[in-house]
Image 1 (cartoon, rainbow over the protein chains, first blue to last red):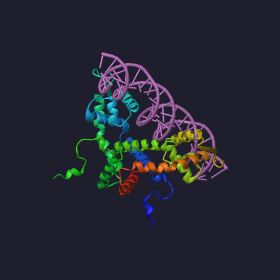
Image 2 (cartoon, each protein chain N blue to C red):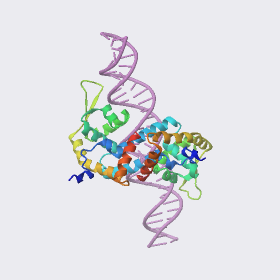
Image 3 (cartoon, chains in turn brown, purple, green, red):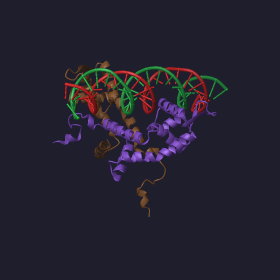
Amino acid sequence: MDKDSTRNEQGSYRLDRQVGFILRRASQRHLSIFSELIPEVTPTQFAVLAKLVETGALSQNALGRITAMDAATVKGVVDRLVKRGLLTTARDDKDKRRTIVDLSDKGRALYHEVEPRARLITEQTLAPLNRREQETFLAMLARLC
Amino acid sequence: MDKDSTRNEQGSYRLDRQVGFILRRASQRHLSIFSELIPEVTPTQFAVLAKLVETGALSQNALGRITAMDAATVKGVVDRLVKRGLLTTARDDKDKRRTIVDLSDKGRALYHEVEPRARLITEQTLAPLNRREQETFLAMLARLC
DNA sequence: GGTGAATTGTTGGTATACAAACGGATTTTG
DNA sequence: CAAAATCCGTTTGTATACCAACAATTCACC
């Protein structure tokens, strides 16, 4: 009889029920928490610092790949961090196309100063869920990438 | 003994485990699906069209509020949609501060043409999860806003 | 009923994001 | 080895996003 209810027949399109819209609002809340706890850098800039600490110096494009930014975006981010003295860049002698990006001492120091607060950001963002839900949620979210 | 394992002592900070980072990558994938299925408008622009269909004409700021954009952002979005003839704007006579934003016929037509594909976007974005997981996921995500 | 407070929309500034096109360097492959 | 394909970084253009400051208008309250 009403077997159709499993299909998409639940009536009109409601923006507030679409993943994209909810995803955007969740990102907004996260950003707000982030800039409250770490006003020194943006989430993207912090991602660059964190990855360089994890992996060491990288070419600019490689850095973009592991931080999920395209070449044009990563350029702007690196430029701004270099201008603030948090990163250094150098030509690669073996492959003259490449620019090697690395942390400066100041950049490494800032990262370690800020990293504890970064943990709090994840914690506060996920605070509406209990521990078990948090794990489930993160696992599902990761599957959507 | 190891009761501390419930705390944050799980070792080093890993960027790939932070909500913010995963959220960003999930948004990227969603955007990619969106622009593939609906190249005519951006997600934000579509949100404006959808909300105007839902609620009818609104002041520019009110529109921003229900679509989760600040005043500066919504202005740009509305301007571009007006330029393309998808929206109309008019001064409010009762409150001379306000600009009334509404769909044009062309905007309404485009919305209805595109809306079925918008459902597919949500479907494809959530495709890695089964039906039950999708519901759980959306409910949890909504709690993070 | 008039003044301080709040709201509305605008502007300018900064920071992601992504697409497309480009020149130079390196790798692949025929 | 030489041509083709690929990779690297840059630039330009468009579109969110958010902040802060601003003028005009309306509201609240005394």
